[in-house]
Length: 578
Ligand SMILES: [Zn+2]
Image (cartoon, rainbow, N blue to C red; front, top):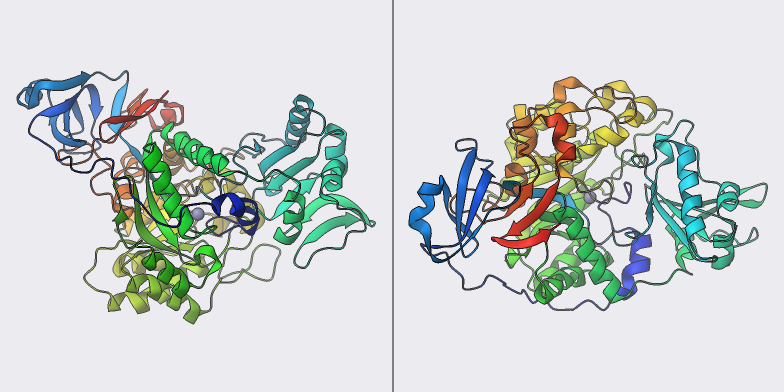
């Protein structure tokens, strides 16, 4: 969903509205840890190979935990004074690491197609294999059962081939097939799907939508939400239980990659306050497997920024409110679209076009959206994808932020995918840190170089090394479900910048050291989500840790994508076990 990334996909909204409409209207934090303060004796002693993430004391033999807080870490002998009769000792089967942090992912917009078959280029590097995969799913399905696919990205295959109605009919003659383009702006369907949706060669296009045709006959491509929603009509609507199950599955998928904290990057985009209230309700029923920091969407529920801000405030959702598992931390504003979807905002035109895209706001509109967040005391989280979007948002920030001095809000630019040296320097001076969607390089780097932007601009993608050099504290993120939550894979990309398409390196000058890459998924990511009590294993921090098959700090970075996670713990309590 790369073009729809961060924004409220109207398709997802339409499909999920009903189930999310039953979300609670009031926010009731569970406070699982309420009243517990750390004592001077450990209730938990973790013994084994411990990696702290703290460069001054990189490893330890034992870690003492009281009421979820680390009260000692060092040698086993160091911990003797902290152990009492009620101390439980565990020896995890693997290396104990600080829990990883994904500082930008999406729960709600990812629910639409959570259970659909993955048809990404990463999974199927050859186009013919995408078609074959659809056929395989259809063969296993009962006649008439829907075959649903997602993340198909024609821009990554030579000649940009699409899935045609005829091709899908051939591999799935007895099942309706609907495949979503990775941009979120197109579906591809077969004859049975059109029949189920009541769409014929003679059906007029709805305003703003297109049923693609060749010689007057539907060709299988369905463009833009008004037409896409027609195709979703016959699908069963998700129930509130489906939503609850989906949220749990998404967070468990993060935990399986060693993650203990995430930032949900557009909370309220579909159902407004209800999304945040529902997270608390789910956490109250059973502690969530991952801590969730939320960015309140400035257009929550389709309202204006001022109306949305008033709604959040009226519901008691103020900066840093919530509890230790679900906390409202930021104000999300989007300034442009997706670069691979050619809707990012650039100073120069896209290859083969005469435009470089446009901003989502007028300059005054953007200032208004940002001011509303700043007035309420929120950290700003501003989606800026193209270099002109960075400039547009930076000019607004440079004008506004001096009027809000003395705060440590750690404002962020999201993706900041293409930046100039000057922009990075100015971001540092105005107090804005970038969070990069690092796997843009791995999956789309060749497309940016060859077909979308050209080699010079493509080299300026995700400038992690330059961000460090400018004195910034950058993080890297998944933007799930644009890419999977897999921080060590993202960190691997940050070190090597190797393209999946051809194995070449995209601008080696932007490769970072292993330590810098790991900081971007631990300490800096934690700092950016205002989780100063996480990111390393040190006295005074929360006992949020993962048990891994190897230590990324001391192993060859080439091996990082193969590191597996057996368990995660939050506040010293198991959150995920394989
Ligand atoms: Zn996003």
